Image (cartoon, rainbow over all chains, first blue to last red; front, side, top):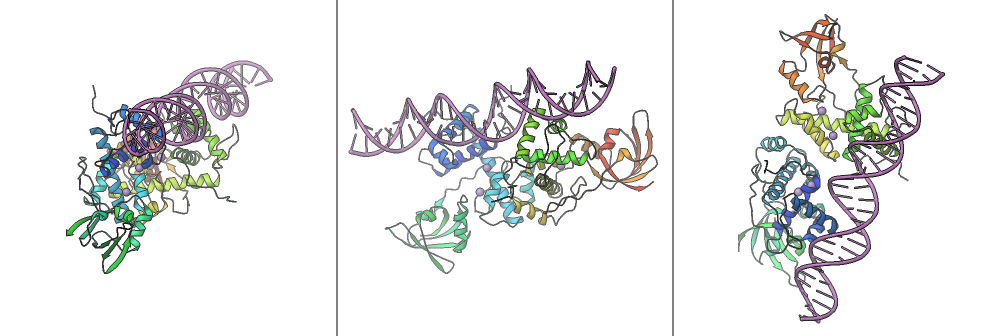
Length: 229
Length: 229
DNA sequence: TAGAAAAGTTAGTTATGACTAACAAAATAA
DNA sequence: TTATTTTGTTAGTCATAACTAACTTTTCTA
Ligand SMILES: [Mn+2]
Ligand SMILES: [Mn+2]
Ligand SMILES: [Mn+2]
Ligand SMILES: [Mn+2]
């Protein structure tokens, strides 16, 4: 008579798909998140992701109808948040204790996040004294699965003349993170948007006594908090 | 023209089999190690392990002929030793930093040992200041794959009246490790073999002002260094 | 609103690593 | 040395998670 769903018996693959759906829903608040987008994000064929959606739907982690948009059940959301929690705690450990750089942590955390042990992750959190954010500035969800929803302000959406503070970066691309480090940007950097060029959407920004021109694509992956407008 | 075998592209399964073969060869110096023993050790059918032996043979990690005894190639041995190195370093980390007990570390280390990252394990080792032994008393191989071969003396082989020191325990069974802890035995305990009962091969041992009767099976899993005879 | 493009689904194939059942070889005992 | 038991191998099946190719449904656009 168990109506509790077993959150432990998921494969690495199932976990990664649920996390991907969660991330896509988060990053595309308004737009419809469908199968093709998921397939693209997971770097698999639409047939493969469609298969997995059917499987996760039958297992009650995904609630979506044929041809409809993707949605997670409460159980699916919980799996995703716990995976993100593990991912970010491991990234923090690698960065703070094992001399990993900004761009090195993500790949290894992708593997470590799938280790099955509640004690492991809770003790790791205690060992690090309950860190609030990961090395990329993202909040670490707590053991209860509370996900702090901080609306992300992309640097590309800041108006000319405004000043902001870098609070987080997208951690998906090693090349991007190296690029960010190389030009001297880091978490907490104060950035002033000096000029927005309509022609190609590039931005001229100033920070730490330097000036740089960045593309819109670059600015889309940098998240900031507005200081003055 | 690459004659270097890629040690990275092994599946979790392939790694576990290679480790199992290495352990079996180590624990059965004289006797023949064959397919059935491997199947039993891995808790799979002989057909499954036979399949894997064929695969690992074709990949040049195992060198054995049909119906012959199992043997590892130099590459196979290296994979196994590196896996054991990772396993023992993770056990040490869990035990020394994350409040895991003796009997809890093995299961989680079985998962962690498969994480692919040289930097991860080398940095973990540095972080812990290059520990020599794991929580069960086993030597931790170095990054070069040197495996210190310490001949294991089983407590069951000690003669009546002799005194010895507990240097390691078999870590495969949670029940066994709890049992060891419960009766008050620990690494470095000095043990005197008071009596060996021919009838059922049980032993009466004395240690830390206590006396206990243990079975031969129990004594087979406790490894000691002789102090006096 | 019809036709084209995009998005989603289905069918059939592959690789991995399990399984059982049947069979062959080797080792042991009578 | 022949028979029996043990050990090892092969054949065929299943589940997972990927793939391509073909098809259907939905959405856009002219
Ligand atoms: Mn990450
Ligand atoms: Mn992952
Ligand atoms: Mn162990
Ligand atoms: Mn393992």
